[in-house]
Image (tube, rainbow, N blue to C red):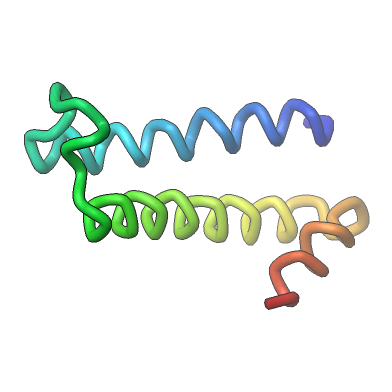
Length: 76
C-alpha cells in the first residue's frame, strides 16, 4: 500500500470511528453544533486511538518504510 493509499485508508477508518461513536450515543442525526466539548474530545480520542493502532500495525508489517510514522509516534 502506498503512503497515499494508507492515508486515504486511515482517513476512512477514523471517519468510521467518529460515526460509530456518534451512532452509539444516538447523536448521529444531531447538528454538529449540538455536540459538547466533552463529546468532541471523546470523538477525537477515538479517532486518535484508531490511528495509533493502525499505525502500529503498519510499522510491524513494513518496518523498512515507516521511519516517518515511527518518528511521529515517538514525538510529542
